[in-house]
Amino acid sequence: MTTREQSRRPARARKSRSTGPAPYSPVRAVVSYLVAAGPVGSGTWRWRFPTTLAFIGPGSVPFAFVLFMTANQIMRTEYHVAWGVLPALATGAAIVLARFRPVEAWLLVLGSLVATMLGADFIGWQPWPLTTPNLFALMVVLFALARDRRPWAGVLAWLSYFLAGAAAIGMSNARLVTIVSDPVANPTPTPATDSLTLGALLGALAFLVGFTVRIWRQGRMRVAEEEQVAEAERHQRRLLEERTRIARELHDIVAHHMSVITVQSSTAEYRLAGLSEEAKAEFRSISGQARESLAEMRRLLGVLRSEDEAGARAPQPGPEALQGLAEAVNRAGTPVALRVGGLPEDLPETVALTVFRVVQEALSNVVRHAPGAAADAEVAAAEGRVTVTVVNGPAPAGRGSEVGEAHGSGLGLVGMRERVSLDGGTLETGPTADGGFRVHAVLPVEDRSNAEEP
View 1 (cartoon, rainbow, N blue to C red):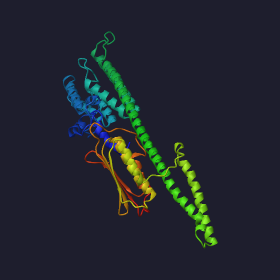
View 2 (cartoon, helix red, strand yellow; view 1 turned 30 degrees about the vertical axis):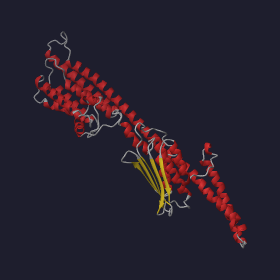
View 3 (cartoon, one colour; view 1 turned 135 degrees about the vertical axis):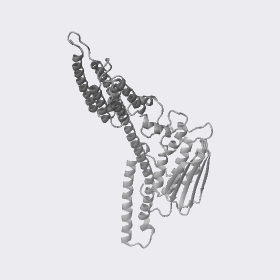
View 4 (spheres, rainbow, N blue to C red; view 1 turned 180 degrees about the horizontal axis):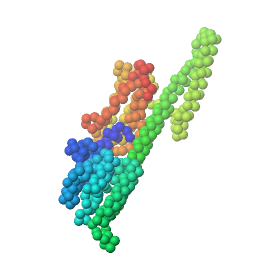
C-alpha cells in the first residue's frame, strides 16, 4: 500500500463508524481501572458484549464490592461470625486481584473457604462451607487462572479446592454425629456435599471457558504476527523488484557509455596521427577490456530481465518525453499543467531518467487516487539542482478515490524514493491543506560523489 493510499483511507473509514477506532475518553480511562473492559488506563474501548461481561469478570471493582457486602452480611446474620468481615474482604479482594495476579487471588478464595469451614457452623442447613459469594469468586478466579496462566496452574487450583472440600465433608459428617442421636437409623445428608459438588462442577466449567478464551487469544495473536510477517515480506519483495527494475534501466545508460569508450578506443589509432606503438597498444587494450565489460554487462542484463522483458531495448525516457506523458494524462481525464525550463543540455542520464519516472509515478497516483483532479507539474534547474514538483487538488465532487493496483508502474512513493536516493537527492511527499497531494524532489547535478547508496 502506498503512502497516498494510506492518506486517503481515513476519508473512506469515516463512512463506517464500526470500522474506525473509538475516540479517547478520560472517563473511560478512569473506568478501565474499575472494570476490566480494556487495558488499564485506556480510554478507547467500546461498549460491546465482552465489555458488559467484564462487570462480573476478573478485576471488576463493582462486582467485588457487591460480593464483599453480601458475604459480610451472610457471615454476620446467618452464621453469626463476629470476624466474618475478614473472609468477606478476602472474597472481594480476590475478584480485583484476579485481573493482575490470579494465583494470589486463588489463595484468597481458598483462605475464605477455609475460614468459613472452620468458623461458621451449618445452622439451618444454609450453604456451607461454600457460600454464594465464595462460589462466584471461585468461578471468576478459576476463569482468570485458565485464561492468563498455564493450564496446570488452574488444574492444581481446582484439585486443591477438591481436597479442601473433602476435608469439609469429613468435618460436617463428624459434626452430624453429635447432632443426630442415631445417625445409622436416621441418616441426615450433609450440606457440604451439595455445596461443594456444585462448586466443583461450576468451577470446572469456568476453567474450561477461560482455557477456551486463552486458546482463542493465542490464535488471534499468531494470525496477527503472521500477517505482519507476510506484509513485511511483501513490502521487501516489492522493494527488491523496484530496485531490480532501476538496475535494468541504469544498465542501459552505463552500456551506452561503455559502447562510446569501446568505439573511441578502437578507432583512436586511425583517427589520431603520430601515435607510437605503445600508445596504439594501450588503446587496443582499453578497447578489449571495454568489450569484455560490455559482454559481462549483457550477461548481467539477462539475469535482471524477466522473461517478458527479454526483448526490451527501447531507449530510456527523459525530460523530453514529459510533454507526451502530460498529453496522455490529459486524455485520461486529468488536466495537467506542465512547465519544464532551465534544464542543462548535459543533464546526466540517470538524473534525466529519475525526473521522468518521478513525474510519471506522481501523475499515475493522481489518476488512480484522485481521478479528474487538476495537477500542476513543474521541472526546473537552479544552482546545480533539478527540482521536480507535482501538486494536485482534491478529486471533483462525485468522483471519489479509486483503488487501483498497490504499485503501478513502479512501487508508488517507495520507487520514487529509491530513485531519488540513488542520485543523492531528497524527496518530500504529503497531503496538502485543501485535500490534495504534493510530491517534491530535489536532485543534484553538479557534485554527486557523496551520494549514499540507497
